[in-house]
Amino acid sequence: MSEKSRKIVEVLNGKTVSPPPLWLMRQAGRYLPEYRATRAEAGSFLDLCYSPELATEVTLQPIRRYGFDAAILFSDILVIPDALKRNVRFEEGHGPRLDPIDVDGILALKEDGVLDHLRPVIEAVGRIRGALPDETALLGFCGAPWTVATYMIAGHGTPDQAPARLFAYREPKAFARLLDMLADLSADYLVAQIDAGADAVQIFDSWAGVLGETEFADYALRPVRRIVDSVKARRPGARIIAFAKGAGLLLRSYRQETRADAIGLDWSVPLSFAAELQKDGPVQGNLDPMRVVAGGAALDTGVDAILQALGNGPLIFNLGHGITPQADPDHVTRLVARVRGETP
Image (cartoon, rainbow, N blue to C red):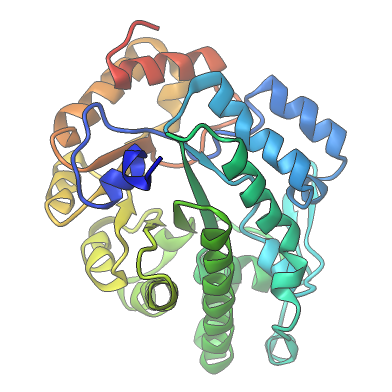
């Protein structure tokens, strides 16, 4: 089956598809009982990410249950820092932890062996593509350099990522070096995913919203543009979605200057502005994940508003961020049926 028959690829090529194709960020995750069972089998979270067999299984679970139009590789944005030997670990109740990096640490980073370390993830991509229905797209992904750098510098996530912002002001050369290294490694990683069978890839910048206008241009936009340019120079047919959570009005320049094929929209983006952005190309989003938790009328009205505002243009239906662990799987069934105009 040609890639044009995969609806999400059609949208990324600029076509309007009705009803729009959909997938959900974190669609394989803790809200699903089958995921929790596999996660317990794996041991640690990183063991799950680095097991091609188990990563394939959890990637396929939501496809079996819901029939989404795309599967997204199960992994984590911090596998590149892990490959750079930053001692990444996931602590229950605290999230990711790393050894904080300083200027000397940045200068000592070595890129050798990163893709070898990530080889199990690439193997999972090939396995997933082979197991998916022909009509289902496969998405790969990476973390954006700014977001990944914030974790590397602080050693964990913070509400406003102040440690990384302060470091960038005090040590601009070292910070630029870190962003460039992460961008180049991320581009290599995405090319490897595409070569293994990914139909498209997404770049996640979950912490873009804490940046001012100048900083956004330097720390969020420029490195993502570097990734996009590098990937497309080597794989001209690559399709890339860029998601800068909280970017607001800066999404206009972000779309134009990163040259991404589509931009992801978080739930705070007004639908009127989303419709303006859609005039320049495909958009993805942007249902509030709390509407999935609430279910019922809150879910229905949220879905309907997006379809009314954006359904007549190139749209990939998605949430405005990842599905939360407290979401009821039955509410996701209702969401899928609502988007597709079916009876749940």
